[in-house]
Length: 403
Image (cartoon, rainbow, N blue to C red; front, side, top):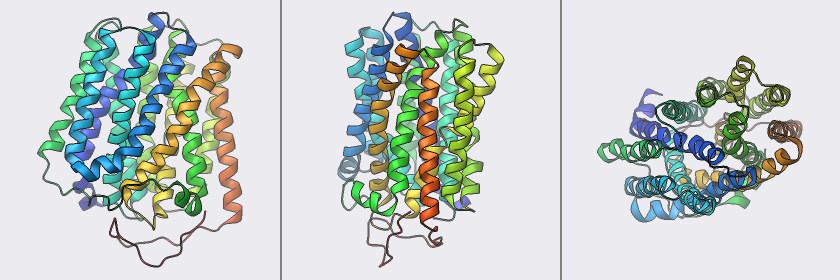
């Protein structure tokens, strides 16, 4: 395990710095949209276009990495994303913000596929949950740090957008200076959706559902909390607690999932997420600070961790391709859900009130949890593979497991 962590340390440091910037701008854009009197539909559409761009980024990421290599691809995508962030402060108009969010989504789709592929390439089936958990700790820890900058300057100022762009650019430093050996380049740059569906239907269903829920959560919850009238400080604190909860759960739950059938962990976490989200439906109707903070912690602990658990489950069964292609395929499917999620949730919010956001997510997680339980009843877990398999090459004549 220590050797595996050392091989991904530069990537983890870069992810932390990168997500400080992305976490800040992800909250800042809907907050600024509310202050600029953008409609809920416009704010939801801006959130959806991020995932439209991310869809393209995950699709092209294997080709970009194969052409330029991991480190040069990281540098190019981060530079473009930082430039797009500055555009929000220059032109304050919903349509242009949709374009800018689409560009940022494209870049971060490629960046996430690259770094998740790197982490998966260095992991084994025995420690994959722990490794992905550690990656997500850095991811959400960076995002939580980014929320604190909301208290540094007004949302209407140029300052916060410039801080976000600076952070994204600084993420280039650990990647540019690393001496760690990158993973092998993808032999074939492709998405393998049908192969993934054959080997692990839970992964396909799971990442689409996670996209529906998480896309809605990150795109719309800042606007929901802002409309409570409790103030920007409460919003920043709520988002920080939410993200700290997200940072706290991936490593321990991932490590626990390494020691059991991962599908049971996914089902249990989905059930806990449903309970928290139903509570938020009622609390959001007459909000007070401390119940909101407590439920933010619970939602952070149980909701975002579902994706890395599903990713670990899918990579356990990745007998037909490299980690880069697998990461891109998972993120590509995630984006389909995340494109639909914010627009669907904002429609429900306009019709039934802001609490509909949390009910929407509760229904999604309930459906996913029940589906996982159904799959568990049909298929036994496969044996755990303890050997490190070479990537980008055929992995023997093992029959894919369908779970």
